[in-house]
Length: 386
Image 1 (cartoon, rainbow, N blue to C red):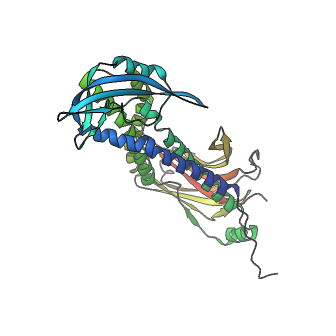
Image 2 (image 1 turned 90 degrees about the horizontal axis):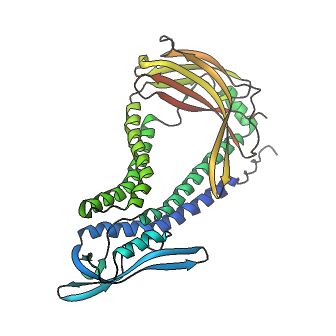
């Protein structure tokens, strides 16, 4: 019947994948609050607590056994006096639960046998609240494990949306897309991410990563400054995290400099293509294109698919076709020019994954001496082969 609407598309596996990722995000954030955020908040507040002499009454390594094995925690009972009144507490630090690693905890107990005179830290507003150690140990890093689950879940959600977007484009009725292909005029293409967006994303990641790592570094420095004692295992564990943070900090000014790069403006004579089609491509740079010493524009066909391994999902990409549109060092051709671009009809993806997505992108690479290069990717709309 001519007036009937087409049937609604059936939900794809992308929705289930997104729901799976959302569960990881919620679980990760739900565990992060009690296991890291709240203890970290109390540890920071304890920096202003009152220092009071105390005596260790009992000290031991407590073993917590379950079906997954044994974990351990430091159990110290200490006694202190405030305003003539005696108090006792079993809070060694603000860490929640128990963790693996017996030797490090036994070393703490060995340094604090019964009868040891030390100092503890008492809440000035509530003398019954006290903690034996404000030092951040390697166990705090274990408390960040829920954050990894949340990040993995967020990555799965992003992959699900990318898969759904690609599948939705491929599922458009052929007649409708052919009509668009024949009727559409010149189209100005937009890059996948703007320089400002790249800078903002890099800055947020750098602030988030270094904000967490700096808490541990600051505690190590404070412990060394006040007592001259540094936990070697914690320092070694922090080294790769600090190096990653430094790389992120270097990436921020790099992206800031890239804001002042020449920007390409690409125009196609037709916005929708099919395998075997050729269209007219025109490029024009704004800014200072004379700084570019070498320009390369290419059309790439990529096959992407979500792969699951060990309970985690990742996007795997493979380039199955590359067509160089222009590659030149000629100064007069770099600022503005045009070429004929063809989508190769014989280029085919491997088809190893039935849920894979095929994408065609125009890549723009402009080499600039002693400066971040121009690096843009712009996706094209290409009809499926059938």
